[in-house]
Image (cartoon, rainbow, N blue to C red):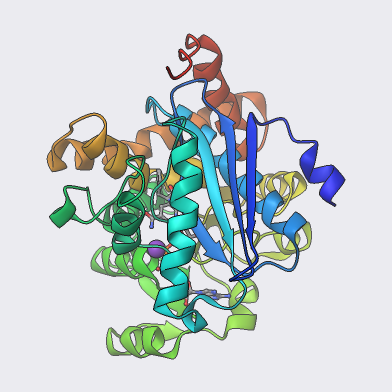
Length: 355
Ligand code: NAI
Ligand code: PHE
Ligand code: K
């Protein structure tokens, strides 16, 4: 596995291990062709170092595609902090040490990589990283950052859902059944928007407090193990990646898949199978770009909140373009979106190396 994941065609892999806390650090720069590599810091437990490297590589690749397809002047990268224990079992002192070491690594990359929040990291963590390095998006607004990107991500996924429902012949969201897997920062915001638009919500989460919130809001709860076999119009994965492999793709009882999670498809074949079955898959790196619009828009491009919102609402237009390529070429939508992203990467000039 390690051999395989090290034969990767990205630009750079940085690793470090901290014996004191048992933590491994990975930063992978997939591409700086369109600008400095950007992508969040994910903190999680992994079964092996190879698995963590692999995840960082696939997540970094998704960032390259996301920035390119969204016309943002950034490349793609990602950090993975492979934790020695679940995040909620790590004490504050240890967590601080972990973030300082990670910030040192980022700083050594001299601006070729900009981080931001991802799973298990938030704005306060970005503030802490920023004590050591300047190359951080998504600090708290009190510290001059753009704050959380989650609500804008929810908005983008909602726009993607409306556009996909229309494309798939389902009409408006009013009366449709939407299954949201993961009611975290993004999924809960999406549930609110979809419900306001008249959708019936089915929800799932591993956290009982989130489920209590959902029940109070009048949503129906689906057991974790039944999520991928429960019939719905639109399945919205908003927890982790890899939820749809070929086997799931062959049976998923939904008309469309539109969610926030990065790398929803576990393999290339899954996209093909969904396509053959007429299940419309909204490519994740197009759908979940609201976070990138928020962070890069506010902090690099000087956009107002209004501009960020307006640009995010156009995710539906980008998807319409993707669906049109998929139809005219008779290919699955993930491939079509990659074609659109690569067109931009190939026509752009090379970003000058950082000096
Ligand atoms: P979060 O950590 O706030 O929420 C994740 C939720 O999923 C939690 O409530 C957790 O309990 C739940 N969960 C975990 N495992 C589950 C399982 N097996 N079944 C059901 N629920 C489960 O994370 P956030 O920020 O909402 O992000 C969600 C996804 O969207 C992640 O994959 C992230 O990479 C992606 N994303 C987030 C962006 C952002 O701006 N926050 C931007 C683009 C993508
Ligand atoms: N982690 C989020 C994503 O996957 C938000 C993010 C975007 C973080 C851009 C850093 C840079 O899109
Ligand atoms: K987070």
